[in-house]
Amino acid sequence: MKKILVLTFGALLAVFMAVTGLAKDGTRFGDIKAEFELRNAAGQLFTEKDLSGRYTLLAFGFTHCLHICPMMAANMAMALKASNKNALGVFISVDTERDTSAVTHAYASAFHSSMMGLSGSHEQISQAASNFKVSYVVTKSQKAYTVEHTSDIFLIDPDGKVVDVFALNTSPRTMARAIDPKVK
Image 1: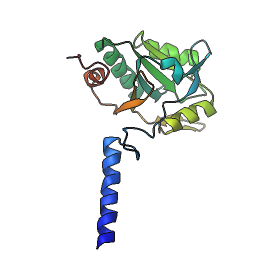
Image 2: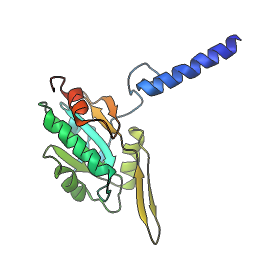
Image 3: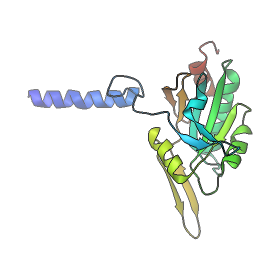
Image 4: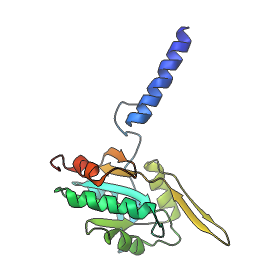
């Protein structure tokens, strides 16, 4: 009976940790590494160190996306606009074949002047996605080119730690309050 109780408690603890975002060490989102080496619009190396000192909303997507990515980018832009903090929006393209860093930046910055787009090689994007626990798949055939991806929006604090993860349908006001608690 004790074994069953211990196993049940362990399973419940694992579910609780997954739902609340707690990592095994008790920290929130501790298993997500806000680390990447990608390219900015000028083709220069851009890493998580370049985000230091400000809040950042970061998401993965692609510029040919018809529904999810525009909504994600628009929500990020509205959150940035509502916040009075020095914050940045980062849109990382997982479509390495069609989205250059310049194309991705043009897409992201069209939503808000404080948003930027990043891209990179397949290896760089795969590593960044793995660090953020994001999944994506690009499927190409003679008749179709599809891209599927995780649509979470990550909030990185000025110290470079992931402090929140928002679902696609999170209101921009909620994201803005996470950046700036004074937002009404």
